[in-house]
Length: 71
Image (cartoon, rainbow, N blue to C red):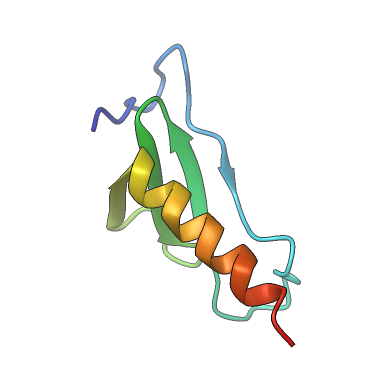
């Protein structure tokens, strides 16, 4: 997976879940790349991140959506 460097022509756009309330709780941020996604801790954004493939990201999102619709 290719990760654009800081200052690249296509900077990463990081986002959090709509369930994040910004009250200082534990949260992760995600950024979509051309061939997958990056995931990092929202409190320590300059440290490590996890890179996943597009297939893995789609599977994760589908699983979360399914789990949130269960009673």
